[in-house]
Length: 382
Image 1 (cartoon, rainbow, N blue to C red):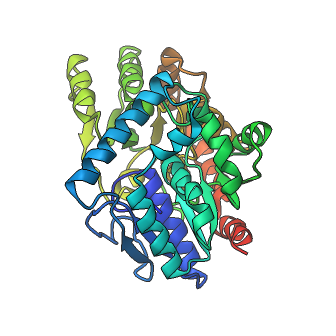
Image 2 (image 1 turned 180 degrees about the vertical axis):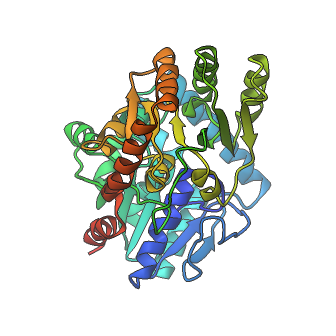
């Protein structure tokens, strides 16, 4: 259960894992809850992957009810109005009519497994587990603290609901060992830690002498582009000369453009539209800048490693775990913008450091090797 035909790391990783399983003769279907245009080329989705559209809303009344429920969920995320009513909390996740359609579809297709991608679809899958003859897998796409301990995010005010539903999962996949430890400590559930795979089937090569920083991904607040622009401004004031390419799309696009104009950086920070061929930017960049406030297992981070890009990022736990044992990234204390700017300048002026980090980045890709990740998924799907 996912929606892979829109932009984002979550969509990209769903497509990659679907392709890996299809290559091993698994019969893979994706159930989409939105009527989006099918574009198999967006993330090179294998043509043998079956696509089923099962819209959440099929009429005006359902659209109104769904919108109302989402507003209640958003309010609950902020002030916890449902935190003591887990059953009611669960009912807010989706329409009963949609659940019936979903149950009928799953039972008719006789799937062996249903995988709920990310928090929303994982909860929907768990809530119908008792009505389907199918094993249910939850797949968490962000870290524990982002899901459970960040106000305004799932599952900050939904812990009781999650506690009640988590026994419905036959398996629960998380991205980091730390997430596994934190969840198993607090909930009666066994987790499996699986890194996201790399997007590209072969490693590429960046250009450490191109003198261009790169940052890309969804334009949202959690990606910290406000901090990145501030860090770049300080870097320029310190004497930095490299340009910065920013590639992406999202709700914060206009705010990002406005911030660049306010700091008079229009000639230094270039905004590019989202592209299906991000390889072009990876090949012509000398370092990746990641300013995220939190991440799951960042596809941007993984892709940069595949192209040997030195990385500067904040030391959120995910990046610490991915790069453990490798000198592929400079991890700056959260969220020290001054230090971030100094490390940018250091990387610009030290070519030997860039060479070393690039070599380490290619070695670092072993942590999300296709064969290793496929083996872990196949173990769950026995």
